[in-house]
Image (cartoon, rainbow, N blue to C red):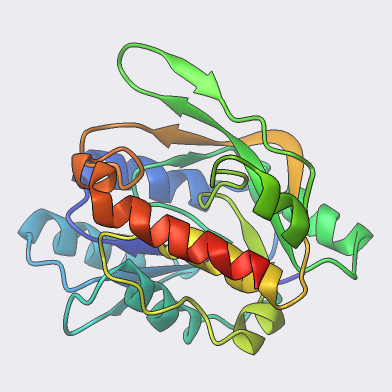
Length: 235
């Protein structure tokens, strides 16, 4: 199964970006490409690294946006450059386990009727680490009843190319809001079920600028957005 790994990059420390890219390069899977979206980076070391790494590895393709318009826009831009059966999401500051792609290939081959599947992640920082424990199956009704919004991880998730195209990609959400949760709702409202594997296949780096943990994600508009999205599940 041909897999495209989709990784948007914006102002990521180069040492973290290098770790993320290398964790994809050395995947135990024979048929994949890494599509890196250069989201109009202006930092010299980042653009130099992306240029060097794409010249060194045929499996890496760097596509550059002319303007930074938020992560949802960057992801949709990257999807247009994907040509595989599956698209696997990677953040530019996380580390994939070596069998991430092999596990997705096996899962979707065994379940041809399924279209989107996440993995468990190990969150880590300098002080500690902890592991997600999401349900193996998320339906629209279950997501509506759950007290929170975190039932699948964006890093490491895979969706069939045909499915994400049929939904029109990510919603055009503001850059500080939850483009991932908006997509999960979109999948569920469209009749899809979201699945999770039991395996921990991503090391997720937690730091002050992590989208999920940044201070602006505690702002009232952040919670208002999540609430409005969740209401769509009940309509």
